[in-house]
Length: 94
Image 1 (cartoon, rainbow, N blue to C red):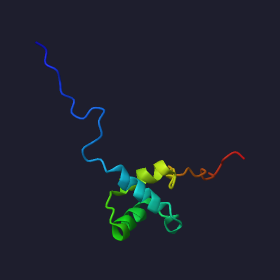
Image 2: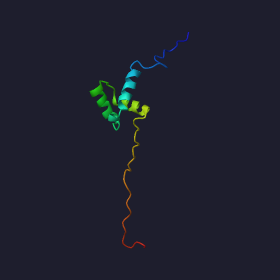
Image 3: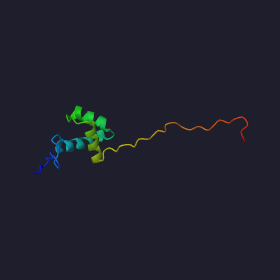
Image 4: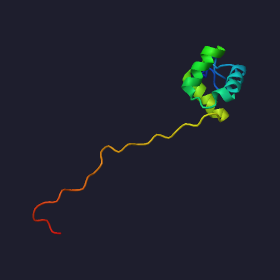
């Protein structure tokens, strides 16, 4: 007799998922002109303080990305060290 595995919440929403109504309300608030230039961290703080919607910074960032209110910036990779030209030596051919 073969045992079948139980797969928990496969293809189902998470038990901890935030309600869609709260997400729509938060996105509607953040799309107002007052919050236009806010990044996800500041937006998260204002949602918690002024509107009573407590969500994480990452969740706020994902919501803002989905609705087109915020675009992530690409990070520049800094070079480890810059090469400098070699010093001239005595007897060097010119």
